[in-house]
Every structure is written in C-alpha cells, then in structure tokens.
Image (cartoon, rainbow, N blue to C red; front, side):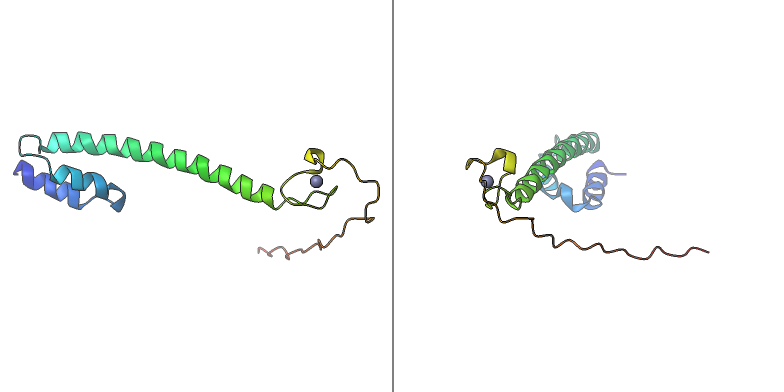
Length: 114
Ligand SMILES: [Zn+2]
C-alpha cells in the first residue's frame, strides 16, 4: 500500500484530541510524510497529551480545594475563607452560643439483594 495513503488513513482514524497534531502533520513535506515518522510523531504527541492532562488534573484539584476553602466559615469571627485556627481576629469570648446545626441524617435504605 502507498505510504502516503496509509498516513491519511491513520490520521483520519485518530480521536479528536489529536486534531492539532494532525493539522501540523498535514503541513509536512512529502520527504517527512512517511508512515513511520507520522507514527513516531503521534506517539510523542500522545505522551505530551497525557502529561498535559496530568498537569490539568493537578491544577483542577487545587482549584477545587480553594473553592472548598472559600466556603469554610470561621466559627470565631463568622467570616468565610479561613479556619478558626487561622483567624486574624483573635478569639471572641462572646459567641452566639451553640453552632447552628442544619445537618440532618439522611439514610437511604440499603437495597435488598436476593
Ligand atoms: Zn475568623
């Protein structure tokens, strides 16, 4: 089979995450547009994509943490975004008594197997 034809077939079969590298490869000259080289480039690209994905995952986990932290309510001053132990306002002796517990236990019935 013709090498160039094989390359096109390969590039067409790729998932959409390879779109940008496919666009690059299509600009290659005929000298470099060989099945072997295309394959090598794709393997390299896949490694880059995996690496990028793992970086994105780390970043989004950090974002989730900072979002969660902004929802934390300080039991000392009543402001959001920090823990009581991180509070800059010192301890206030006159607090409004017991914390308002709105948590109610909700049990879903366990499914009956058999
Ligand atoms: Zn505080």
